[in-house]
Image (cartoon, rainbow, N blue to C red; front, side):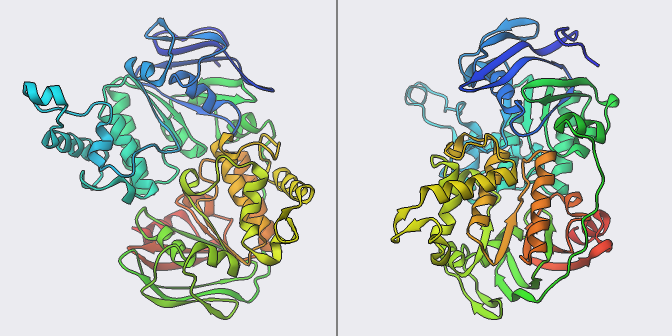
Length: 512
């Protein structure tokens, strides 16, 4: 394995002895990192291990407290992300950044808008819209996207927005591209297209830093692997020197044990959906969810999974069909009404609608409970005064059970890593003591250790009788963990697969 402190030859991007401190924590401790031209270098570790901090240093968001960076063998100091981009470094972050009110073409060209020729146009910066959309169409074509360049970004799904970020990177003249969980919202077809793009970039000599918690992707793509744990390099070397179990042990510091979840007794029908439609995304959907049952809902991007969840949760209008909760017909007209009825939904888009960034962890956890009068009394006295001690006790219990880091419940949720924000969002639903949970990509961007924690919690909730509908584009994640799998295609549920018959090949056969 690569010796610490020894630079690999011909590195296009290098970090030597990087130290970064934040109040009360050393985020990075003497980290060494090298990226070669035409290499895919996987950067792995738990949430909070230091991956995001290292990426932020490599891209000019943070300056290191100690150590130095070099690009092409020459030392560099980045004062801002603009400096890093000027040096040919671009990052595609897990949390997407675009201007919703602008169309795709304008979003792709922000910072480099084409201006019409002529003195007057150059003086007043009059945009050349023909060139703008022509460039956008070329960039979209490189990603295999069929989106129209004139589409408003606000209409994009999370997966489509992810492809927009990738198209933006491909449209630039970059020597290094960092991908942070790029497939977290992509289906198999989009994932394969992304991998083809990465291989083309590698063949063109571009260095790729690839961050993912999906280890099967790492071993499919990576030439080199670096594992961070607690801010330090746990191991670094060619991908051929690692296997799945070794990486998990390095990430978690624990030996891998194989366990199969026990079969649970399944109870009466709790949620019953009949001929539910919200065309064209949801068409004549019928299914039932029983107490103590975990049902996986999967399919390709655009199949209608999230739209179906929004229909259940009152966030999308329904043209016809019925929803019954414990035998009673419900028609929630808003998420707040669905929550009062006992139906909870965890969105896949935690950045814009999943958490309250400025509020503390404990207040984020309590907000859903405030909308449930019979539950809110645990946190309130006289209807409005906060029971701080009880709120803190319950918040600390969820923080401990879910392994949220840092564990201080008064920490602002927006300062947490993406995976820990995901856990806070899940804890908020648990604190509300709901009757049914619909979870959209609940382990998106969560490390392998935390992913097992979340699934162990879901298994425990199911054993206690809670019905769970888990939406996931990560088909292997569902295997051996759900009692049934529902496969959607073009707005319809086209297959129901049960128990041991749930296989990746079987699901993909129906999804395609």
